[in-house]
Each structure stands twice: as structure tokens, then as C-alpha cells.
Length: 336
Image (cartoon, rainbow, N blue to C red; front, side):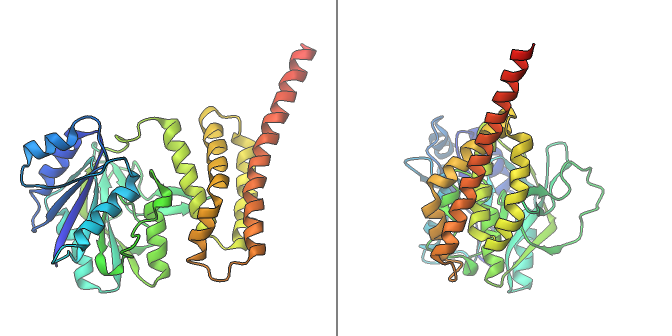
């Protein structure tokens, strides 16, 4: 199979060089494309200097993960002989020698597989990812094996629901060439979960292959915890309002989320992140509904109104939690 790899870079040239060095040592031929998301640290010039023959696309502005990767995918699909498989790699990954070979292998064996994920380690070789689950019903991402010592407990290749986009092999035939990734998840988080969800709904399989191994240093692009939490929760809400059935969303997600708000609304990071994410979700709700309509032809105006009311309930609940806390503090100060 013709295989191409896209490395999305942004302000981390040393990490990119380590990723590229591991790519050029792979056991099978791989076409390499670097898409730079408007780095401000001179990364594109350094890449061009270090690898003068390497294919490099420089975006004029930061398009986030989905937009940056989509730029690369569209460029590859426009080639006279486009790849059959595209491997996506975060800039802070370092691949073991046969990683790409093992990512591609399931796609060669089973024509119903659209995406293959890897066993990903932290630099200390504990496990970072052996597949993904979503904690129900709030859709909290849990990496299988997270921070566990690798004793071979996840060494079986299995079909799963979701895998991370940090290192992901995709069958080109399964992708929507107009918008492989939903750019509404920009700048990051849940775009890979959304893609896996859409692929499975279209009848494709998702597979985790533990023979494909690599190290991921993680969070070099977004080191600020509050910023990560804001984007994470916004992505989580977009995924939920895009994919959950209305009954599930109203009867299971909303009660669980309201309970979480009551407990965490005043936490410095979680409270601020939720407040921002709820407001952003409401501001962008028309776009979320448009994205949902592409998947749900049964959505009615009444259903849309119920969804809008649901996000408004979350905003109201957090405001009430702050109001109650203010009154409790005022009462305490008055009585002491």
C-alpha cells in the first residue's frame, strides 16, 4: 500500500526533528509531509535547512489540529498518485522502527478497517494509550492502560470504539475528502473521537494494534493546564451535542453534568474551564446543530430547541452555584 505520514508542527522544532528522524528509520517506505501551523519560532526554516528535500506546507495562521491535518490530507489527495493510507503523527512522537509497518498491517488484511491506533508509551515506557474509552455519560476520555507499567497486558490486537489521533493510520477510502476532520473542534481535543465515531456509524472498523509502538512526550503545544481544560471541555460538549441522541443527552448526560457542576463549579481550573466551555458552546450552537443535521436527518425544530435549552440549563446551574457560594460566604462573614 502507498503510505504517507503527516507531521503537524507548531513551535517545537526539536520535537519535530526527533519525530522525523524516527520516521526516516521506518521499516517500510513512507512519504513524509510536514504541515507547519504558523510557528513563530523559526521551525519551518529549520526544517527546510535540515531536510532540504522534505515536503513542507506552511499555513499562514494556526489552523489547530483538525485544520492543519485537513490541509495535509487534501494536499496528499491532490497528488497524481495519492496514498492509500495516511498516518497522522503529533510532532512530539518518536516511533519505534516498525511502528508504521504495524499500523498499516491491519488495513492490508481487512478491507473493513478504516483506522488503526498504536500502543503509545510515555518516555519512562509506562503506557499512555492502548485504546480509548469514554466515561459515560459525560464523555470523559480515558486512555486504556494510562500510566500502567507495560507488562504485556494490552498486547492483543482488538477492535475498539476509539483511538487517539496522536498516532493514527487512516484508510483514505474511508475519509470524507471535503472535511476529513471536523474543524469545529479547533484548536484541539475530540476531533479524533469524532472521526472514529463517524467512521463507525458509516460501518467501518477501528482497531488497536499493540505491535505498533512509539513514545509520546505529550502537551508540548498546550502546556497551560487551564487552556487545555477549556479546549477539552469545549470539544467534549461539541461531541456530545453532535452525537448523543436527544433522549440520552437530556435524561443521562444533563443530570450527570449538573451534578458535576454543583460539585466543581468553584474549583479554580475546572470551574473556569466549564464556564468558558458552556458559553462557547452556546455561542457556536448554530454551527453545532448544522454539523448534527448532517448525521441526524430526523432532527426537528422542537428537538433543536430542547438542545439549546439544555446548554442554557448548564450555564444557569453554574451561575446559581456561584450565587449560592457568595451568599454562604457573606453569611459566614456576617456571623463571624
